[in-house]
Image 1 (spheres, rainbow, N blue to C red):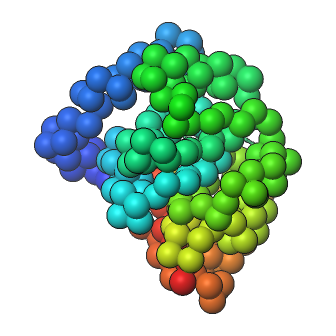
Image 2 (image 1 turned 90 degrees about the vertical axis):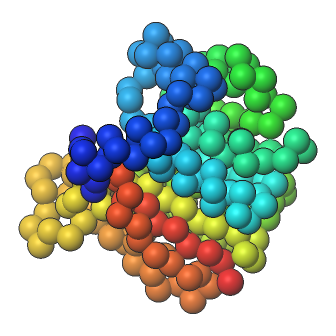
Image 3 (image 1 turned 135 degrees about the vertical axis):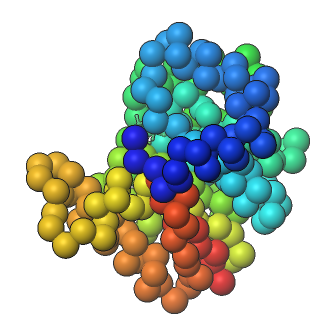
Length: 219
Ligand code: SAM
């Protein structure tokens, strides 16, 4: 899989931090493996980065688009105070079932609410719960520009907008577009990245993490 880290550096950092040795993450990955969800979760150091960012803005209300087995959600939930809330959106019924099992096992269902359905349709249902302290986009890439439009309106001043996979497996900077559906992903991501870079309400950067992460703070 695409990674900006060389394998030896990745192994070194993993060995230092041992992130996946935490009982909660270990359990989540065991359940995901048993239930056969694709291993598309963020890498451990990026999950830790999400937790640090959420803690640094003292997030109490977080939105995640793309739950999968709940791996990244666990990091975000760690950052929340007891009364904090994470709304995580997922369109796959199977993934919702797996994540529910994970959150139940970890006693996280008071903090985490899974919203089942296409995120573009479901996001407006939580507008009244906002504004939000952190919004993390990690779902269907073609919808990123749409998610941006929702997020910028529903993020508090001082809040963080974060998106994963913003380099589209390295294709983002290539002059020639890849063939097939990938081309549409690259074009959508260029639109999204440009929106993030140009919006005067944001201070934006693109970090060369595992999959390339956009991090922006709303002024
Ligand atoms: N954030 C997760 C983690 O790091 O543990 C990984 C998310 S995975 C890369 C993307 C997820 O988004 C998949 O579970 C997929 O089913 C879901 N998804 C794709 N399109 C979606 C949509 N339109 N609305 C909601 N979820 C969607």
